[in-house]
Image (cartoon, rainbow, N blue to C red; front, top):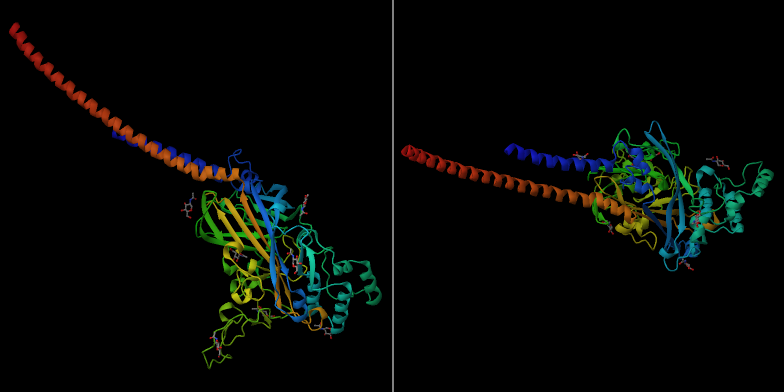
Length: 572
Ligand SMILES: *[C@@H]1O[C@H](CO)[C@@H](O)[C@H](O)[C@H]1NC(C)=O
Ligand SMILES: *[C@@H]1O[C@H](CO)[C@@H](O)[C@H](O)[C@H]1NC(C)=O
Ligand SMILES: *[C@@H]1O[C@H](CO)[C@@H](O)[C@H](O)[C@H]1NC(C)=O
Ligand SMILES: *[C@@H]1O[C@H](CO)[C@@H](O)[C@H](O)[C@H]1NC(C)=O
Ligand SMILES: *[C@@H]1O[C@H](CO)[C@@H](O)[C@H](O)[C@H]1NC(C)=O
Ligand SMILES: *[C@@H]1O[C@H](CO)[C@@H](O)[C@H](O)[C@H]1NC(C)=O
Ligand SMILES: *[C@@H]1O[C@H](CO)[C@@H](O)[C@H](O)[C@H]1NC(C)=O
């Protein structure tokens, strides 16, 4: 009897275990990864990764433009730039069309993601219209002036004077009023770009310069100037990813982007690696707090990783929040040497950095000291020269060059520099190098993803970038003869993606409600089990009582009988 009870308990437990296993495997969809990616897994039952790919998530971009309030003072008196953040200019992003196909026997998936951006007046700030005028650094002009100072183009002094006069005649100034719409999506007509692609320039070059371009540096191959011109209804190149069919750990890891297994614009192999998944939108199930989540961000032309930062509950779904560590933006570290700004112009943009403690050591013979002056911890060494390394100057932590046109396999047309919004990852001296930076971790951390840790599913994404332009004094170019040496912030974008309510409800159902239900079921089964024991015990006790009673009766009967016998005997 006892053995039977134990068996019943085992049976109930394994039933629960089987139920759990079924749920888990359905959700993780092992062996059915193709389906998961296409949103077909088990009909509608998989809320996971798919949902992020399909239209079950919403993504909003908020753009903030830095309105330069003292352009002429910067221009003519070298004043410290003063910027005021204007925004948000809200954009709703949606996936418009997706091309995909399976390759390599279902082990790889090739796809292209088309994106549509629509201006959302309602979510924008009161004064923010698509036509709002803003003072911004004029990149084609600044780019041309920078090229004139770049030793690789070897522009003679005379040529510099002639070209800068020409730029003035064309109406090119370092700052310009443009509308938000033109700056970001539509592009504005720029005289230099127009001239650069005109037959007139060709004629001049052929007639007066023996066919060699009269402008001795390349004019960017752009018809109009704007940061995301032509991005509407287009894609960020094509991806080839692992389907995870062979190994779930590999799910969605990128094999090739734009047909390339590594990025051509970074020389260092660590920097050139395309790691993890497309913007971190997928991760393997069963995340732990020690995992590093790798991702490739086509908009920032490089790979990143995130580390566990805290537990975070999104729409009642508990999960792990992962963030990018500050060190990833620190190109003074040895591990990030590959992401250094080349600084061919040899300009010290941050003369107040690094702040070195007053040296106390004396009598060090630097000829005898073998020290690597190019890395962070040695910059302040007595035998090193601060940020001056290899005959040029390092940028402080928090900056890396914009190596490509965001999301495109094309080199950036001008020298631009990425940072965290409001220079969040930079030292105070750098933050104070322009007026108007006000960093805040929650609002400005560049990558912050929350995952439901069992399935790996994302419940919330925050992705941010800031674009800055370096300007510097060049005595031989009229427009920049009085310029300060600065990075001037131009804009930052804040992308926030989250699931739609039905998707949250579904995840909530699977990972919060069902485990609770299972717990209750377990409790119930325990209860039933205990009840069963009690019942059985009760039955046993009763049967024992009955047996005893019966035995007693029998005995009594027996006695009676014997009595009777006796009687009978007596009778007989
Ligand atoms: C930007 O600043 C200029 C003056 O400095 C002002 O006229 C313009 O309205 C500002 N733009 C926005 C959108 O606030
Ligand atoms: C993007 O294209 C759609 C139509 O395809 C259009 O409605 C929308 O206004 C465009 N967005 C921008 C920012 O130009
Ligand atoms: C730059 O041009 C001058 C003549 O204009 C020439 O003498 C000089 O060698 C050139 N320098 C380089 C680095 O090409
Ligand atoms: C999840 O990961 C932990 C350690 O990271 C491991 O012990 C456990 O077996 C994993 N569970 C599953 C279902 O893979
Ligand atoms: C890419 O991954 C490799 C190996 O895990 C690592 O060494 C490298 O630093 C990573 N690169 C980036 C940019 O995260
Ligand atoms: C270094 O010494 C100078 C004067 O010699 C002093 O003004 C300065 O505050 C000191 N700096 C530090 C970081 O101790
Ligand atoms: C310094 O420059 C030399 C040659 O220009 C180069 O080989 C070396 O890698 C550079 N060092 C650093 C730390 O960039």
